[in-house]
Image (tube, rainbow, N blue to C red; front, side):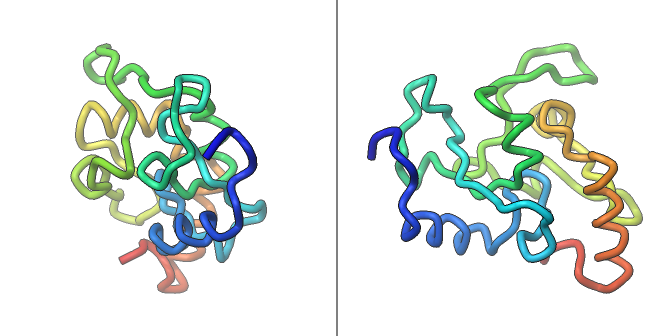
Length: 141
């Protein structure tokens, strides 16, 4: 595929593969106030192809903060590291939740850098997580 719009059939595959959750912040598209998008993990501007192995389901907040980034600084070590790659890495190995399931905690340099770079703990997202957790609808299993 070229840089043309992602076809609806591919969007459905990407969303289903992600179980309709943002592959970065784990918000459900069921409760999103804005539509989700198919995000290029390796940006098109960096020769990232529009193939399933390079596509992720992303909320607008994470997609907007990630934009063309592929690396960020680990706030703990100051090292530049690769951002989380949903096709090559497992979310639970790099991230966890605080005791109220409202805040994403980075467990690795990659996780910490991704939390900061993509602003995974935006106020609105944390408020939504609290409401959903209280309703038994968060975190995703």
